[in-house]
Image (cartoon, rainbow, N blue to C red; front, top):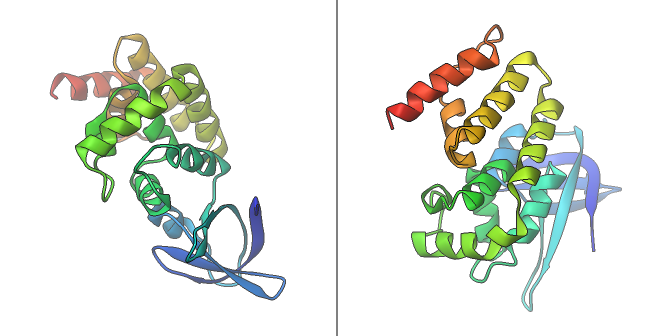
Length: 203
């Protein structure tokens, strides 16, 4: 099993990256989100990988974030969700958004992914809900906010999401409402919360 690859970017498209590791080029299928974050050619990166082995092919699927890889492996345990479908879901939703959507029974959000209809989305929720917890989802969301930016605005957004959840809104609803707010660096949690509540009341 190849846990990760560290090497230089040889080429990137919206669906794959070729990573040169010790003179060998590895083709790794990636999400469109990761494709947008890929550094330029020649840059060194580390990609967490999953090796899919079939009778007719061996393919590598990779993620810049290890948490995305763990969520991807969880998606593959769902009947009817294959390697490409799992990648499509994580191209549309982050691991955090997917967790909250599952916990909130939000099949509509999950069905935004290419090739995932309402029936498959409901099956995904049914099979994954018992494997996830709201507490763990919030812990990972906060950890990501701190790791990605660590700014006061990001902390305030995370606190606003938690406050909305405490008021009884689902995690998915809370995230969508806070994300709809145009947050500036000088806004505190209370200001973000007020605007998010206004958004929720108009839904």
